Length: 464
Figure 1: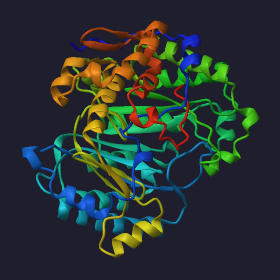
Figure 2: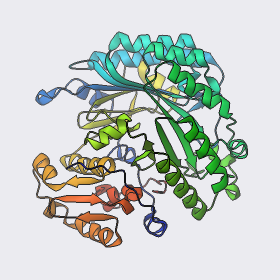
Figure 3: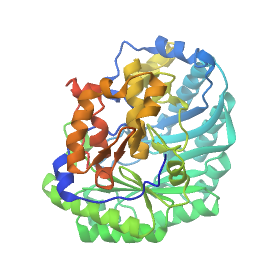
Figure 4: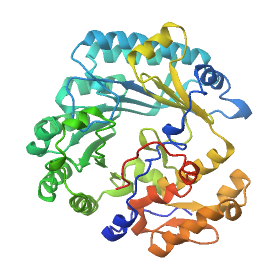
């Protein structure tokens, strides 16, 4: 019983009450639960038995390009600031080594339905380097014609010719970083980017036949206010991208050094951030965008919206996806892969990454083999995050549990959320109500065993 889930009610009082720190659930268990006990050899073994039990999942590939020309103060990504293409040339050689090792250990089909270049700034690479990397990928894997091939783009570093090249290489989806169009905000975060640059890249993508263009915005940046962000929303809506993400800026300067350059006194207050978010939701839904979940909006005919309507929406390390249950191979520093019931993450520094590959080993820093309880809870959190509802019967059949006894404590916690108007509980369904959909992360956290048992060391961002 998958229903149209676009209805959303913004309730500031409820949001203030439940705006706790929590994971974004691009995976469950979250990456801070990974352990060094799961190493390169464990990863290799699972690559070699991905068809155990007759299961053959399609492949998704993620490639992390860590290089950026300049630093954006808000950034929390694993990146390397440089203008030296000698560093990227060396990096591509090691990416080729890693792909050779992974592909050599891989059992089963090498058909790929999804590919994503993330960063850093993937378009840091020169045209020759972009061609070289795609040729390396195609030498090991078969990119299917109907697949979803996406890349993150910095409009300041890309012209019409680069976009045309990306289309020629097979990319058909693009994520464009914008954050805010206000010059005062841009100066405060060291990302000066004209509206003309952004518009030119989006127009070039359409001219080159890209199926989908997404724009990324951030609320909560220094110098932002309701009036300034309203102009940003106006301009972005005018550009009419297929998808829009409105991310919450999490100010964690103790964890991310670039954020120490942000003047805390210039950050909007908690109430101002809520007003900005409320404005964004109203403007985007009035413009016809459908609320997908958390911070994502898409046009009614976009594949994300269709996938959610049909019950096919999935969530992975890149966010919401139309491809469920792929085996994800990840390449590059800090990249996280998913193979069967396992996760693995590469080393975060170039020296460690290169050192492992020089030794003929996969550059795996840590990972996790999921327990049956992890798999059960992952299914529940996926359903809530993607569809705002959960079939109790479906979970019982798939995982052979008595839901009400297994999750007695969790259901008791959900009763409090039901009284608050976040969720509705019935004999067969748990449904996140329109007032609770902005707080779906808080609902999902109820089923997070690691949070419930207080096995928490990581500092998470706010839910809103």
